[in-house]
Length: 234
Ligand code: ADE
Image (tube, rainbow, N blue to C red; front, side, top):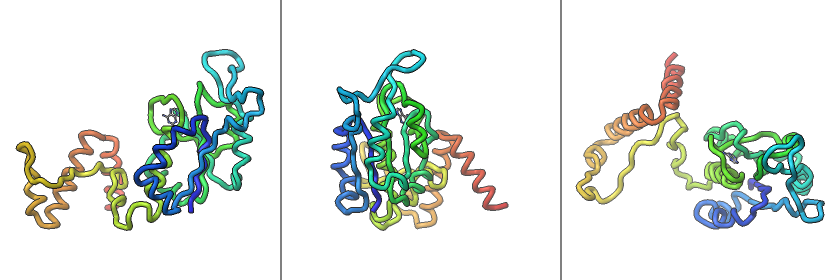
């Protein structure tokens, strides 16, 4: 079973997330074991302080190294674990990283707050990841994004079928449109090919739809798709 420890100052933010839907199922099925650690409890200061003013001056507070260091060392097996910091300065988190991390036995994620981390915190972690080019009030939502994306590709979390093999991004393409009943709603019809087409025609239609959507919305992904395709044929 994969173990994930999350170091946070706001443990309650994780309750809904871990108690619903696929995350709950994965935990109940003992496919993942998730521990939330409030690292404020490890502060050795009088009022359990975890932040302080920046050396050199400037706006905002900086997360101190001591509480993080002691919380980290309280986790059994922390030396061998993959240790991740989430921050807007990290490298972009992507689907291939989710797949790669899903085979790790033990992951530790640190959620930051305040203006930043004392730089020395970084020396105890292996990698720094960002979930996108925007700034959140804290790392908790980013940690949940990581945990969610990694958990859903852990073997057996999503039923044996192939539902994540066709995911957007596995082949650099966005997904084709989907339809379910009814066949007509408010004057909008399900495309004829999906109702009457045979298998090959449907696959052709879906690929064409994927290509058109990707080219329009994500020219960056479309370029990668074409490059990969060229590599295959040369
Ligand atoms: N913390 C604040 N903003 C973040 C982001 N975009 N990604 C990861 N962690 C963050």
